[in-house]
Length: 383
Ligand code: GDP
Ligand code: MN
Image 1: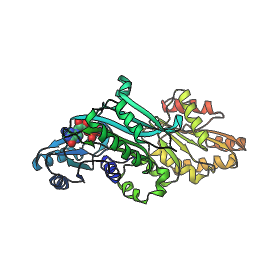
Image 2 (image 1 turned 90 degrees about the horizontal axis):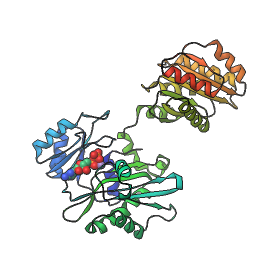
Image 3 (image 1 turned 180 degrees about the horizontal axis):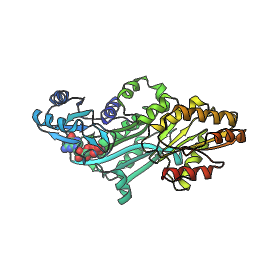
Image 4 (image 1 turned 90 degrees about the vertical axis):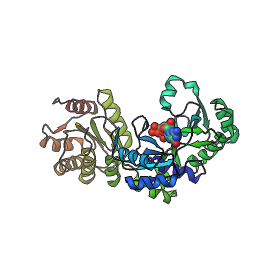
């Protein structure tokens, strides 16, 4: 679960990470009240889960209530890269001497956590990584050992933070580590982490991704969940208990088994298409489950063709085929379907599909042929 900045800062505050006093608002009047409470000057910040809000006009300084009102008016309802601003966060504005960067995340390739610190903060860290990779100090952290203060100090030193920021930055890093580790986050990022003119180190932004697998340990996360922006596709999939991950392509994917679903994404890529999602319906491919999966994919505007890839095991081919036909009848689909059915009783299953074949329902015997047909349909070509 991705948190909004203000929720991330609430989470930070639990671990004693210094953040500015402030309040959230959904209306202009609430915004002015929050600004009055924070004390002027304030900064009015759009709460959307996308970077570069500053450049998009979603972050504005206000010297008094009148200005806070005008900024709140402009920012609430603003569209930032397709995200409509429904909430603003208003905090007491900070004086900035320097902008740094700090984060912890998981590096799955080495089965360790990765700490990153840079003196080049306030800008997109990916572009720093591209243009000046040496400006980012990195350290892998053994999950069984954790972060010790010596490592934190080495990182701060290697990143070239100003000497007057060292103690404060080490302190923030140690607290941020606890927030990440005990707080069961997959990502905590502070960009910028600032040094103020009076020598304090302080989080000006917060990006936090919580590990949903740990939700059972954190009943207090429920309050975040109410407001967190779930992609509508993800929300529906969650409701239906499906393993779904939204992607950006135009070929919707349904497969049974995570391994087959991943292979399906690969094959679609190989034949020149782009998958719109990962969706594993698990073992039982009955009409109920299949209809649910099709409904989820149907909410994705980008999908131009759907590739159903089923390998029958315990569930027999004819049952799978009946399920697909029934689901196809139930859901008013926007995109045509291509099916590859194999495994137990594949022949019987294909015979059933054959009876219902049309321009909107195509059956192919192999994965590659089916992928090619789906990609062709996505490009508006009848295979
Ligand atoms: P992002 O653009 O979405 O990452 O939003 P940030 O919260 O990181 O803010 C972007 C930039 O706005 C920061 O790098 C700062 O330069 C500026 N900014 C944010 N808050 C303050 C503040 O309290 N005082 C000042 N002077 N600038 C701020
Ligand atoms: Mn930022």
